[in-house]
Each structure stands twice: as C-alpha cells, then as structure tokens.
Image (spheres, rainbow, N blue to C red):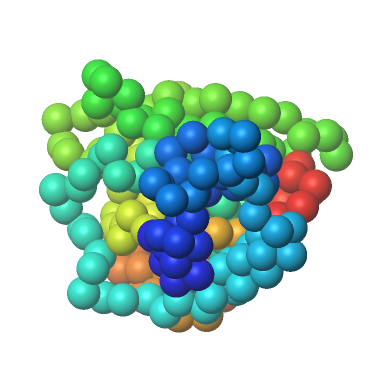
Length: 224
C-alpha cells in the first residue's frame, strides 16, 4: 500500500474498499463509532485522498530492478488492467475499428493454468464485451487461443504492481501479424513506461512508429 492511503488506513483501521460508505468493521480498538456504529471519515478527507493518490502513482517511474521476465507468479497478475500501448506490424488491425484493438478490463489466472482476459472492442461503433480464455502450453508464460485467427500469446515481462506486457503472434487466413501490448494497473502511466515499451518493440522487430497510445481512448468506459 502506498503513501497517503497507507497512513489513512493505519490511523483509522479502515479497509479502503469500504471507506466511501464509512469505516469497516475491522476498525482498531480506540476507534469506536457512536453507538457501536463505524465512524464515517469526513468527505473532504476521502476526496483529498483519492485526488492525491492517483496522480502520485501515475507519476511512478519504471524500475528495472523489480521486473520479472520469467518464472512468473501468475496469482500476482490477477485483477484490473487498462490498455495503455499497442504496436503491430499490421497497423490496420490495431487502429480504430481494428479487430485486434482491445480495451482491457481484467486478467485472471485459472486453476488449470490458463489465463482469462476480459476486454471490450468496437464493432460498427458499438462496444462489445469479450471473455477470452488462453490455454497454457508446455512453455511457462505461453498460451494459445483461437481469436480472429490462431494465436500464440506470450507474457514477456511485468512488475505486477504497475504494468504488464504481452506479445502475440496471430495467423489469420495464412497471414502472420505480430502484436505487442502494454497494460497498466492505472489508466495513465508515466512516459518512462513508453520508453520501456519502445525497447520491447525493438526486441520483437517492431518500429516505434507503429506504437499507438490508447490512454484516454477507451470509449467503452465512461471515465478512465
């Protein structure tokens, strides 16, 4: 837990997911509310906390020392992710209305080792929700799935806390397309993550000019 949020929880005993409706029943001793009911923190405190927390996290810089590129802890990637950057050698497939242009919502590992993706994409101006399960292969961190062709999906690196990147090779009607995507725990990341993504693109022989920025372009989610 970071900065002001950690201090707020330490001082109040509040579980963050319950704070907007009042402190949870897990309050520490000495923080009893009136007539045994949880004490509600001042609304101004909650607003200031939210406004102060998100920008500070978004400004966090890429840290090479904490990334993983193998032997992933798949349980730690579970949860909400946002589409930040994509790149491909076939731009029509990731540009507006492209069949591989997706707006990520959740990534969750399954008990059998497969990986479940929940995302949206646009069809004739309408948002379509998709749940896609990628089946594990013999290679750790590699998956396969039939979606707009046959796909090999590879988890390339992550720090679990802020970003994750995937490489995908798609074969559709005999044509190969290579796609890279970076997803963030927050809808906006600092420019240092773009710099990192450019370097990953070079590894997979994708030009930096083929990168698109999806920040604040998710029309399927009212407020990002």
